Image 1: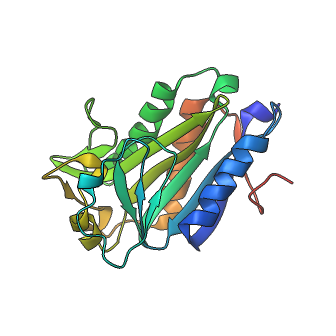
Image 2: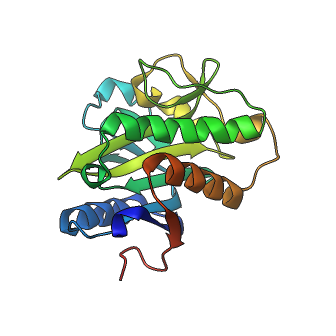
Length: 217
């Protein structure tokens, strides 16, 4: 059954708007038989402001574009060196709620960091993954017709300066961090594979297959 197969796709370094539009189109046009997908990518520099975003959290964007989007949450930054993971999941078919998906996304990052001996944790009051009082991964989701899209932004090895131009995720006095601040023992492909294995395990899939196109044609 398609519900037991998780497909994934590597999209490389891409601009934000076309991928957002493809997520919307995929979700709008999928059927009860459409396999679930995960997209791995990096974005060209962009600030994205969620549906609950407040303008006062955008401090000084300067040359970086700001896009108003349909996910939950406040404002965040995407740029090269950040692993973005979009989860296009039929949560109704998989028979779990949005809270389970959020917890799985967070726990997958926490377990990966633990494999590098980096202690991390989630917070009940603010979604994401934290190392002490620093934030290393942000998440924002949208659920439409029982299906999720958007997902995770995991800081690996990037220029963190643009985060100083916003209040990340609506949080003041929060410092952003990244994997490379703690260790250079990391690899983008390894991170993808480890996160995939956690998603497969905790979201109830039997196997993983790689896609060569965004839509499962």
